[in-house]
Figure: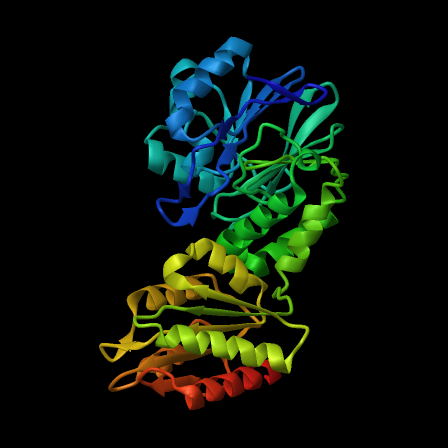
Amino acid sequence: MKKHLKNNVHWVGKVDWELRKFHGDDYSTHKGSTYNSYLIQEEKTVLVDTVWMPFANEFVENLKSEIDLNSIDYIVINHGEVDHSGALPELMKHIPNTPIYCSANAVKSLKGQYHQDWNFNVVKTGDTLDIGNNKKLIFVEMPMLHWPDSMAAFLTEDNILFSNDAFGQHYATEMLYNDLVDQCELFSEALKYYANILTPFSAILKKKLEEVIALNLHIEIIATSHGVIWRDNPMQIVEKYAKWCDNYQENQITIIYDTMWNGTKTLAEKIAEGIALEDKDVTVKIFNLAKCDNNDLISEVFKSKTVLIGSPTVGNSVLHPVAGFIHFMKELKFKNKKASGFGCYGWSGEGTKVINDMLKNAGFEIIGEGFKHQWNPDEEAKQKAVDFGKEIAKA
């Protein structure tokens, strides 16, 4: 079970190759995930986080095969969500009096979920826990990254930051470290994780990064709760977060649409053509919402400077997957992005205005009045769509 990390620190987590959905059905995990737990064995033995509840029995049995559970002096729970704390009830059946170190909000979430009054010890930023051999854990509260109860723990001398959800990815691998995996996959999953989970908290994250940097911690390893451990230039992911939390955008325009009889699809393709004609350098991407994964699309929105959303008019409104996707974007509180709507209609034609109103309500800067066309686009309408694309590129 144990995988050596550094000196007397080992990984004791679980690799979940089969995971395809997370947070209910809200987050797609095409690459699986890991639930990273860590064992520190100095003069004092410390367990940092556990694993998701479905693997609780396996986790405890594996841990028993490595150490006497009664030798665990302290348990650190950096975040109460069940993918991190899920094995805690099973573990505490064996060692019910072991002190648990966590934030004040984590006490609330752990009690609320498991209805147990364990031996909680509340810590805040700057508090320390001496574990012997001249080493200690320094705690750093990280509220809203991504729960109010989140925190991190820094192990002195070994210079390991146990960062919990921050800097992680849903990415299954037995290779453990960032330098041993496919870099394109790694950073794609890291960006997707940020875009879909941490974007709403970018302003908070920006301040927290400044606070962590001000602590002058010499970080040699970032040990996350999901995905790889950053040992090769670990600060590279911190640098990425610093960019991502600062109203991030690339030179990309993304077109996302749903369609009934392909009229709106035709408009999407012609608008893209116009954008490309006007701006040779911009990256243009087109996605049929009905045939794509929403979380992957959010990654594309995150990278974009402008987003175009298309739907035919249906029932004086838009297709419900389009409305749902715009609501999803609203939840993520994107900043510094422009948008506009487009679509075909047969009779009343309100769809484009509905889209623009929803996009404005979601925090996007709206470009013009959008573009709509009655019935299936003819050659004249296709040219107008191309011209609309050119205007979007100029905007």
